[in-house]
Structures are given as structure tokens and as C-alpha cells.
Amino acid sequence: MTDPISDYLTRIRNAVHAKHKIVEIPASNVKKEITRILQEKGYIVSYKFDDQGVQGTIKIALKYDPRSKQPAIRHIQRASRPGLRRYSGFDNLPRVLNGMGIAIISTSQGLITDKEARIRRIGGEVLCYVY
Image (cartoon, rainbow, N blue to C red; front, top):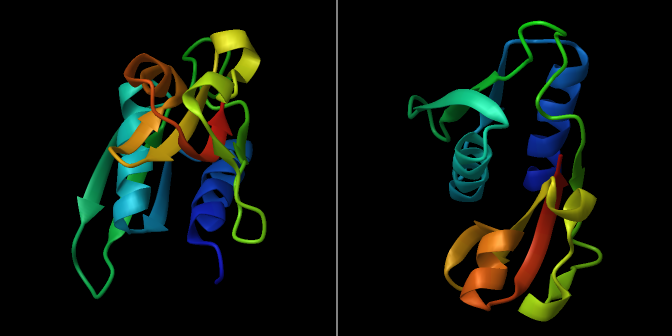
């Protein structure tokens, strides 16, 4: 596997399309931080880290609307990839759905959302878009 973040996003996307309640993903520090941000912003219900084995796993409980059964994550897409990295300064950060979605940015201060990066006035690598 050459791009573990793309694999992470694809597993979530496939689980949402298949209407699964829980998805299990191999763990890494970047994936743990992306999961934390998704939970803080209300895109997933909860998560659990299992440190058993060499790498460990992340179990993510996906969030759906109780009445319409629509998923909270309607679209999740990789922005920067190993073959073409996407960097932005704080003044050129992308706005996802005019502020309704989030972009996850890798900065010198860790992984944060595009809104937090604008407030802190720092740029970085745009990892993915979620809405």
C-alpha cells in the first residue's frame, strides 16, 4: 500500500455506502488524528483504538440520521496525494461547500481543520475534504 490515508478514506467511504455501523481500519498516528477531528466535528459517533497486534486498529462507529437513514459523511475525498502534494497558505485555504464542510490540514502544529488554520493564520498540506 503506497498511500495509507487514501486507504483510510476509501474504507470509510465504502462502509458508508454499504450502510455499515462500524468500520475497522489499521491504525497510525495520522489516522488517529483524522478520526479525532471527524468525531469532534460530528461526522462519526465514536471511535476506539485497539493496540493489540503489531499495528493496532481503529474501530469507528459511523453516524446516520435516525429518521432518513442518511449518513453524516456524504462525501470524503483525498486532496493531496503522494504523486501531487497540495499545499496552501492560510489565505488560500479551500472552503468546502462555502464553509459547510471541512478540509483537514496537516500543519506544523498538527492536524487541524481549515477554519482553525485560518484563525491561527497557518498553512500546510491539504489532506482531505469532508462534507
